[in-house]
Image (tube, rainbow, N blue to C red):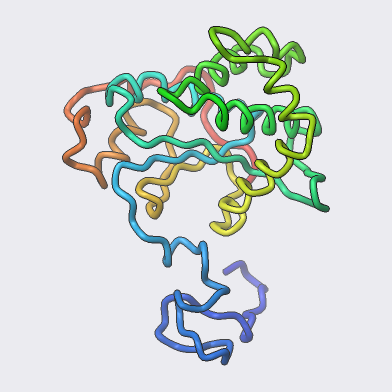
Length: 227
């Protein structure tokens, strides 16, 4: 808790075996605890990263996943989630502005329609080469239909996808890009492929690929966007 912050005595504390808010439900059975990290069920072999699509450190994390996915022969369950605020239904704010929101939505659409064999990551890796270039269509290639993505991203479908996706970061209190989550429950940070692999493997020791040594260096500055 931050210095000077006030304790909300009406809110449920999710791990103290007490009905703090007096609604008859204790800890993780309380609706106020749904989505909180302490109440999440562990899901083996799951790796998630929370990013802002135009954050340079989030981009480094995503790019590191090329080596990580190859090491695990794409046999891990990997997901990308976005960090943004929904100020009104279908209206979003993101740290790097409206263009970032639009790219978040496009990437959500690509994830939906090109999930097989991580095809959507090909689009993301391509965009990451020049993320602020408005010509995103050049990365809709090798079977990715630009018209389908544009229809999704400019309509209600894309907004609904992003609205649903950003709930995860909000529930977990995640505001820094990148933030990693292993097995739906264990949070960590990292930018280098080896660092990401080691953290993932600490919770998935039997995963085929953990025995490999990956790149441990990170080019350029390290850090994160947001807080």
